[in-house]
Amino acid sequence: MSVPIRSKAIYVFTDARMLPAACCALLSVARNSQRNDIKPIIVGIDLPEDQKARVATFNAVNGIDIDVIDFTFPADTPETAGRWHKSTLARLYLDKLMGEELERVLYLDADILAVGNVDPLFDVDLNGKAIGAVDDYVIAFPDKIGRLERELGLDPGAGYFNAGVFLIDCAAIRAGGFFETARSLLRSERCFASNDQDILNIAFRGTWQRLDNRWNVQTGIMPYVRNAALLHFTGRRKPWHFSVQAGQSVYAEIYSNMLSKTPWSGFVSQRSGFRKAADHLLALGKRAGAMNRSQQLKAHFGAGEVPRAETSPGSEKSGSPVFHTQGADAWRAFFNRYSHIVLVANSEALDPQSMRTEFPGDTLFVFFNKVYKVLDDSFPGHAILVARSGMMGANIVHRREVDEVLKFFTSDKFLGVLNVRTAPEERFSPVDAFKGATVMYSDLETLMSGHYPPDKIPTSGFALVAWMRELQLTPKIVLAGFSGKRSARWKVFDVHDWTFERTFFRLLAQRGIITSAEHAGPSRFDLLTGHFPDVKNEEIQAAINDALSTRLDHALTLIDGLMSLTKWQRALDQAFRKARPKTRKQRALDRQKKQAS
Image (tube, rainbow, N blue to C red; front, side):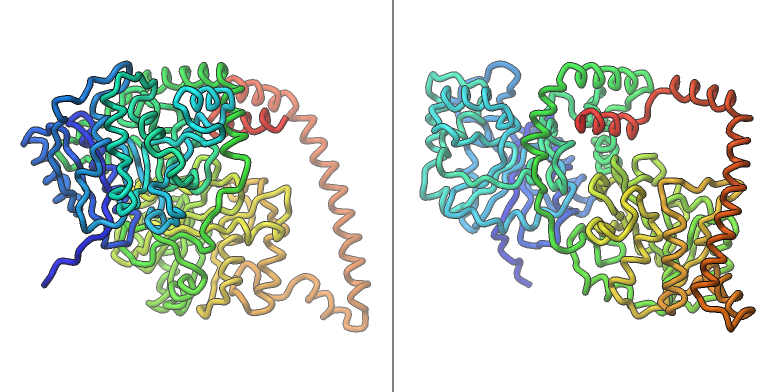
């Protein structure tokens, strides 16, 4: 059997210091790709044999085939100055290492992590240019970029790209001599503040195509770029270091998981509680001193809507860690395999294990977020777990509950996690944050917009029901435990409009679109019309409204009394709340309020 020729490749240059991170960069891309024509390659700078053996072990553990190409600097290569390590210069020799069979090459720095599908990048139209790259964050500062363009001899307004990610048209590179120009600049006596990145910007001036920011989301702009595909940890502190940038600890866990069974299992530093607190204080200090800088970055990189795929991202194969996009037809095919779809609310009144026996074997059970509220042991039926997103990503990821909820889904019938977002501020979490589970994604923001009271947010159950109704599925949809009532143990959040949702579900149940014990049977209105068949519906409705108004007035009187009785308790509670450190979500909300004002 002949091996297909791969026309595309990803190159990462590294020495032994960054070799574990470089392997993770390539693995993260592979886990977010469905293509089989991309070859992952590490260009090893003076790598010892034992380090190459570790790459082979990494390949075996993670099911990837990374090639290692040896590289040694020519004798006339100058040394670097300042913070830049000499290894960064190696990419200036990339053209000499590309195979003749290659049509496109993606260069990545070793501190890149893929969190989205990278496949579309290889098909981007470069409009006849030699490379495609993303603006460096400095582009947000007119004074700095203007000075930089003058120092490097670039045309005003030409821009300046970050060289951590660039896509190469191999034919154009072979014909253009761009890297040879770069090497000549390297050997000249000119000094460059940003080392080889400055050199590449000079060598490719006028011949690079600007790419969407999502293909190189640098540390400073991470809060402002939606739908990120490639994260670039450009700061001095990386996720695997002892001291970590604010908001990057979740990525430390991803690196740790990828390296856990390799000889580099200790590459990611273990952070103590003291270190985490120190990093938090450092972040607060930096944030206070860089408000104007942050506002400029947000104005440039967060001003417009980042283009998103028209379809919802997801994974169509159970057991596959691959991330890809699929549309409504694919979702219909996914759900229509089952005779029933049972949405299980986190209600202590339910027993899903016994409830499973009430439905056919080809029933799909949909669980939500904190399933430890309803499950005591592993669920053996066909199931998916909905992970609702918030401002900090999926809630179970943000709250570090992934292991706690996934332990209930050990059966081979578990289809994976469905990460759902319903509002602009909600963010998906990367695939690796879910500890090896299959991850599917559904973006319901557009569906929810204009279809839910604007001062509230929909529950995950409501969003799923509305989405399934939109898909016009064939299975019977059953709601279990959707009462909207506060239990003795679990609170019902007032951010949701429970009256609106109960009315919505009742109307669907009356039309036979869903089945729900909580919303079945005759309503109070139906019972009254049975008692008074000669009375008009409008009269019955007016009587109901009058009765509700009287009861509401009485309830408000009682609430006023309770508010007076609990005044001191509430004041004490507020004092304790103010004394507690703010959560990451509260800090993010505070930032939003300041920026809005």
